[in-house]
Amino acid sequence: MYKCIVCRYHEIATKGHNRSMFENKLLDNIRVLAGYAGVEGLTCQRIRGRIFLRKQKNAVFEEAELEQLKDVLSRAFGLESFSPVIECVPEAETLFETAFESAKGAICKILEKQNTIRFRTRARRSDKNFPLISKEIEIEMATRLHKEFGDRIKIDLDDPEFTIGIEVREQVALIYYETFRGPGGLPVGTNSNVLALLSGGIDSPVACHMTMKRGCHVDFLTFHSFPYTPMESLEKVKRLTSVLNRYQKKGRLFACNISELQKLIRDNCNPKYRTLLYRRIMMRIATMLCHFHKLGAIVTGESIGQVASQTIVNLSVINDVTNMLMIRPLAGMDKLESIERAQKIGTFDISIEDQPDSCTVFLPSSPAVAAKFYLVEEDEKRIPGFEEALERAFRSIERFDNL
Image 1 (cartoon, rainbow, N blue to C red):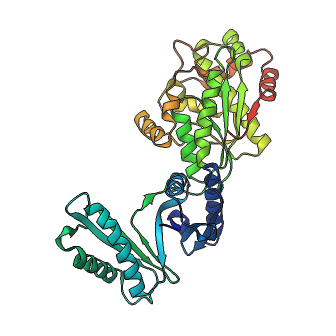
Image 2: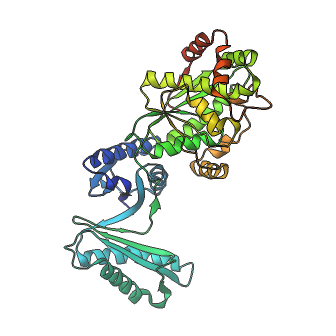
């Protein structure tokens, strides 16, 4: 019968005078994510390094509501961990009686299914006026339980089946039996807003997620080449955007058709530079969009050396067309690491659906792996009406909200 969930943070606690800004943003994000999950009417309270979540009128959380909130809080960047808690006054005998009765009920349920149980008690005392130190609280709690259950319960500090958590604060004592991990990092919105290049592949959604974890709110830009790529590829990116928006206040998805520019490149440029020229177009359009919407950086899912366009030399050629800060969270990761992260955040199954993307249109058989900048630039200058086509592509961008 829980009426409260206590949330803990770690990195935010290292902040100085602006710590309250991080805490307030975390509270805002929890409310937003809870609203997406259909959990309304939460009250949030900050008390010295902890956030307390309650229902209105201090009502009891239903089991379904607890499950929804576990899902929500596991996606709230900035949280280190959280626990449903039982609260009582921080007076020694009241604390031990409350903890004993609740632990007794939980242990009895477990012992109905098995003969013995391994347990431990973990205590934390932040109120130094409390008469017992943390270790003494743990010993007293274990002693009372052992008197009740005898040899059917055994202390195991390293691999317990059941843990009793106790935290004594100045105004309240907390008793809990489960601790769930949060995603860590910083609350979304405590850093600059950014624009991510989002394809239908595995890597770019992971890059978006990693950037959110550092406090950036992410808007998304995808490129398609209709009619050379099907519109289903855009629908796939929309679904990826919906998954990623479960971690933040919903970001916008911008979609740009670059098929006209790709045809101009096909007809006028060296085939081995096609992919690089496509990427330079994307960077130019992304830069224009960032300036227009006042976004602070461009995020990509590029990993050094993973494909021909991602060698150090070719990344330098691509970077040359933008004055924006480039963020590449996956730069030092291999594909298996990206896959593992994609599976954890829920984008992998969508990403592996077989749909072509813009970079595969008119794909060269032998792309350059170390292109010379001046040769790529000369090729680009051969494209007739290049600036006008670029402007047309930018003006035709579609925007999708509330995905």
